[in-house]
Length: 83
Image (cartoon, rainbow, N blue to C red; front, side, top):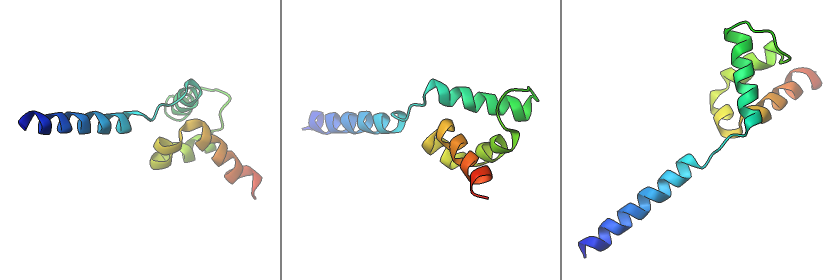
């Protein structure tokens, strides 16, 4: 009886950990994210747009949810194409 409850708790914990840690970012996401951080904070000149990086890094919730590549492309469209 006690073993049954412990087993259910362990399965629940494993399931929750899988859900929380399942969001994985691609190498391109990390490349864009680190490039934007370098551009803004370390003043390193690279091929990324400073204005887009500023907007992308300030939108932390969506950055976590969608990843850097999607957010960078989203802000390209928002800032330059739809004006």
